[in-house]
Length: 403
Image (cartoon, rainbow, N blue to C red; front, side, top):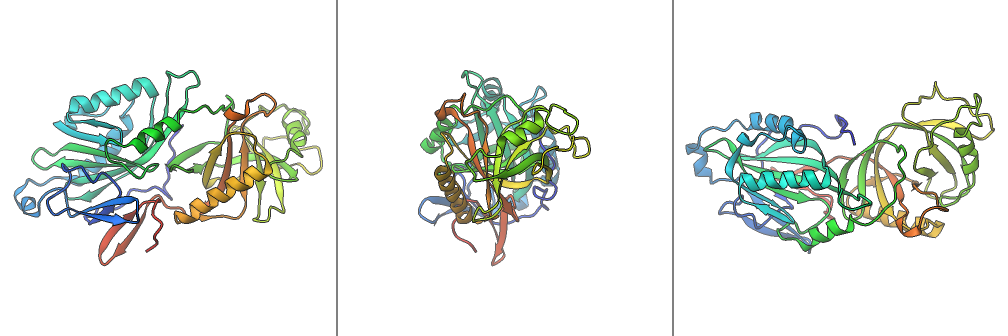
């Protein structure tokens, strides 16, 4: 999956020093100073607040660290995390504390071994969204990692999004700690059974045909849904009777099979969309996405009344994946679940929704079918940073409380 530039959504924030709340690794004493306080936020989420990674007195005595330069270094270095070039080992102390919910290492050799193991087993695609200074000797990054487990015959795709808090040794100007927090779980402590279950769930079988799909980048994955940035795409569409129905499919399929003004045959893609444009689902269309190398000007005109071509401008959407036969009742229930989760997490879902069906129902077992309910979002931002009494607070999407 190609990484796109999200200049309007994911940006490089200005560097600043601030006190932050973070849903992260409260037992990471190697990052936490003496004046740390653990707070309860709701019933399930632990928060850690701290002033910096070092005692204030040491700031005056320690050498000056060019944190801006280190931030720029990470923008250049981290994209090579899993390619042949790899990261620059000289930027890390020999003694590096690494933690994620299911892995820990205490040396640069262990750190690099973990990277090499992931590279061999999962073929990771790492996407860096941003990096910024979040403490005197601390840099936080936000990322997406998409991995295929090549040892299993069906090669399941595992998706993780989250943040990494990287500590800097002021005496060496090198990184000496790295703590990962996943968006999909609440308990990011090592060893997290919740994290292990999250990995296991993603190993299940979904059958996705080897056909072109609309291009999108996964910005955030929670336990319930994914947030995606879709690139623009073109559809051929006609009126349908309901979200889970098939009426109109033969008409739009006929267009790509040559029933058009020039009898051109166009390659099949996946999924087939049905889209409801309002909450009452009074207007529904069925759509087939056309190949990305096509444009409205290059496509043949439909030769049947009621069929039209339309360019979807893309944007930010949330998707809930499920298997089984997508009946109308099932789809409505999944839409209700997704909309409720989005509102709970502070998003602004638009009216209507889309059903994405990836498989031929006559040739695919129900339990491996891939279906998705998709809802477009308004005013999405990767992280919501608010100021309260001069304190900057990083609010995760699992938060129910609005400030």
